Image (tube, rainbow, N blue to C red):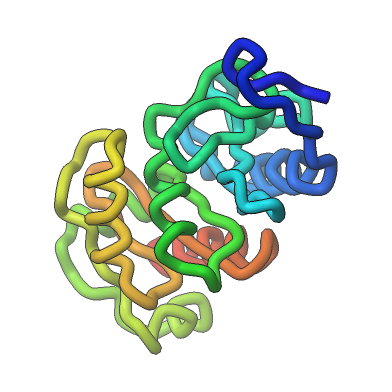
Length: 195
């Protein structure tokens, strides 16, 4: 059992979700999308309580099941380590709005950041880029800073629309998927396409 905010909520840690967050985070890091302690991945809680995401203060490569926190829809830590990423609204708002999405990714992939600065559309000239042809590759322009409020998270939802990923100029990318492999590969393909 794990305790939420000073005993308010008691929930059992979901082993599959914490393992998925840890694995996906380490894969992103191994592919070069780590950025010190920034960047995060979240998995929808199967019981509907919120999202499981990497705890703040750790790099993607340092993620382990013991470094995953259940974040409630309101941003409170419900289980796992204390503390929640300031950018939890990226994940809670995307999953709240998109029932087809079970995993969300936010990284600061270097090639994505460089491509976003060009302010050009991503053309489907490579196998990697074709993934983004159906819905395009939208740009989130509500802020170049942290997506740290539900309102900014909802603006990201609006920018993303039905797409698989979104450029966040000066800030990285947001990618979504129906499962861990789908979301992580979307982020990896986007970085390769931008490169």
